[in-house]
Image (cartoon, rainbow, N blue to C red; front, side, top):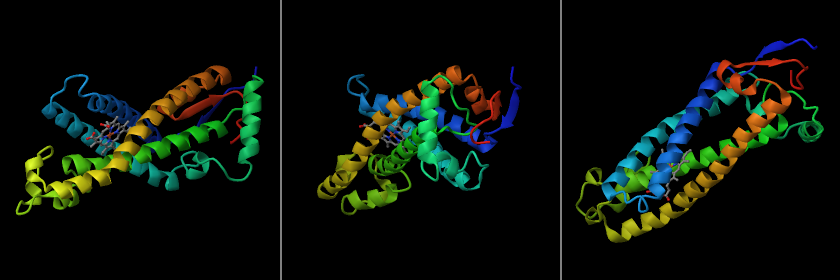
Amino acid sequence: MSELKTYTVWDPPTRLFHWINAICAVLLVVVGYLILNARTFEIPRTGSLKLKTVHTWIGYVFVVNLAIRIVWAFVGNRYARWRAILPGGRGYLSALGSYIRAFLSRRPEHYLGHNPLGRLSVTAMLLLIAVLAISGLVLAGTDLFYPPLGHWMAQWVAAPGLDPASLAPNSPAMYDKASFDSMRAFRKPFILAHLYAYYALLVIVSMHIVGAVVSEIREGGNSISATFTGRKILSENPADA
Ligand code: HEM
């Protein structure tokens, strides 16, 4: 039997990001689903507004966590960096081909950081959560007059003579109709991006979870518990040691 070796892979900020992100994403999906189906569930307007407010506060945690991770990808350990996340770079395509062939022939290659296929899925997830974060921040401004753009949106739509700081959401009497309509036209692509990224995220996160479980079963490693401990235990020599 080959000897088992323990490697330190995921540093504490990377692990913290992963779990804060996962918890926020689940909460955002659940509350987002309720906002989307408020009519079906007969949620009154006030309830819907409360859901949007809760969703936005969870969203702020999600955005700050993502911003920290983006910075960490420049300064973290080698497995946390962009070079270990983004697909591409010298030898990437041949590593991807070799990983897929080895996986299909049931002699899987072992990686400490993300394997070449995993890099594609992690990059897609980061892109989608960035789209959700940016469009969500715009919607927080257009729908609730919340930061960072709420102050500007309120100035845009306030009825003549009204203090923009006093504007409340869902209060048409406080808005100048023409300005409000043009603000809603500006909002449209952001709500569409938010909605389509939500659907795409549901698909890709499901694939991410299935991929993690399948690769753990086939490769016999401990990649799932490593997201808590940071340590991987392998019997084979890793391809990226
Ligand atoms: C994993 C991340 C996220 C997911 C899956 C998600 C999902 C959703 C969904 C499904 C909706 C309902 C869309 C609709 O009514 O058509 C929604 C609405 C909303 N989201 Fe998010 N969201 C996320 C992140 C964020 C963030 C980071 C923010 C802001 C900080 C945010 C702010 C909003 C706001 C203000 C609305 C209400 C828009 C409306 O009036 O319908 N979201 N979100």
